[in-house]
Length: 468
Figure 1 (cartoon, rainbow, N blue to C red):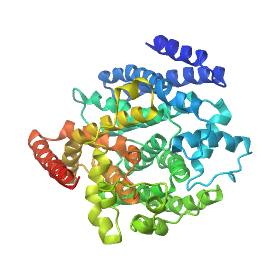
Figure 2: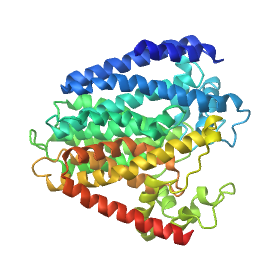
Figure 3: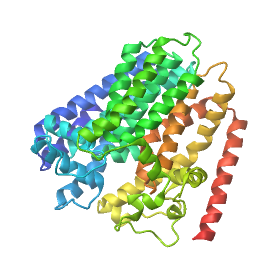
């Protein structure tokens, strides 16, 4: 299958008019082979022969990424004349290369988090400027994060059971598949958030023999990337690590100085992150100002700017908060909307998909992601309840939820406008929580959480029909 994958992808690269085609072919070979080696190492490390499927899933993921890239995203890039008011990933693609050509001085852009241009600019500087290169880089990074999630979940669960390998389907979460193909912030953020929080949690819970220096390297590099790509997400990272310190007591190691070193480094990163963002050329960022903006819709430029047009009966506009109390009250329904949007609307056409319209392909992936979220939430809630109940015997499973729920709360509460793509940052963590629930919870518990969740959705659907 490796030869088939390389043959198809190399043919697409060489027959398309792109820059740095030789570098792209070499990067493709490196990415696919490295991914296979990482999959094999994970299977051996976890001693589960069924994880041998990882390699096949990885190669299939590469093929799907190329399909999405060539049928939709690359034609959009090729046809773009002016990107000034276009989609963010489209602007990042061109502006990252402009940054390189401008000798790494970002005085030509106006962005809150300019680090994304440095991130992709470095990739373009090393390998060349074409749409395939960032897709390959994102796909490999997503694989690394997915394998780390698999490793952590296996360590948390302990005994290996049949069908545990189903966790590997995280590689095909639709939101991740789509944004892997784009020069976006979403999938890199999903990977770095997971590596930072579960890397810290793995050390705190001592589910594996990991050293403090190694943990600091993994967490430190991930936090640096988070600070560059979306500084505001430093807050849930810091909050999650602090909660893990108090909620997770390892059975094999007592509370000690090493854990205090970890939280001190996280606090230092929380302070330094905004400074580095400003020095790189981004807007001046402050956590207090960000909180004020998130809790006051009238002061949020995303709501008041002229090019944002709201529907007369917009649910999203209905849930724009004015003040801290409304922010708290509106948070649960906003979380539900982030999980299920754009459902119940289906804004995809067959002709749009066949003609390669990127908006239709993105909407299709988003809808599929929403359906998976709807199915996954009862298992994630079940896992949360079970993890809290059994925390005295084994607190390690709590790390999944202490990582996911604060992250998702920050996404749903920190962004006034409901952009479904933001939820991608927490998609891998949700999948881990749902998998743990499916593998460890009783049928009775899942039936109860399903009744609660689907009952809630039914009430929401009734309200939607009446309100609309």
